[in-house]
Length: 113
Length: 113
Image (cartoon, rainbow over all chains, first blue to last red; front, side, top):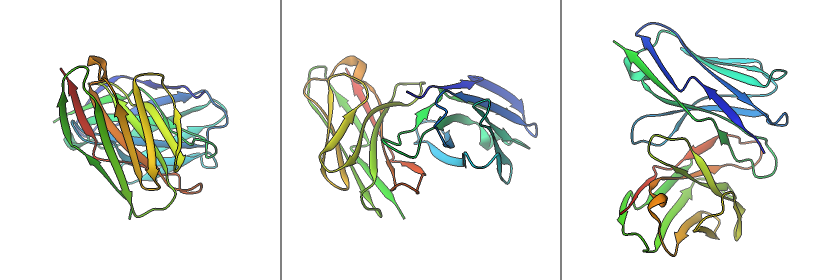
């Protein structure tokens, strides 16, 4: 089955700096890659996703890049703000069969004011 | 729009007691439904998924079971809880193929004492 590795496990940045979180996946048939943000005690919320027919996607301060050949994808947050502090999860799935997301282990991002 | 309801929101149960968690969804038909568990400070573990009424697949052998008696209802059960069953239980849905986004319900926080 699919295996998703996520790094780093914790990340501390100064407000205004950029943050990058990286994930690798094992199943070459995976074609959907979402990123979720989870605040303490809350449900994970989708912040951005990318499909395998696209190499990069951007939404304001958030961008995701995908390298299908290397089987890795990354989340980039620019101009970080204290409210960006949370745990971020990457995930991967196929669009056939169970279509269940396999999640990375999470990155705790702390933005220092 | 799609909405996921989960109850109860919190639950404290003694070891050996039964469990029933309910998830209902609105605003979609024939969704894929999922149960995840998140231990404190950890990632998301897929427990069960269902592609339709009465169709349940288990991802992790354990003392939990799931049922889908109606298209928009997904139930997680146990006959005898273990201490290790404590965690944050999240129901999630994914629309039909072509609607990739996976949404999470608000979750049930279960503490087994």
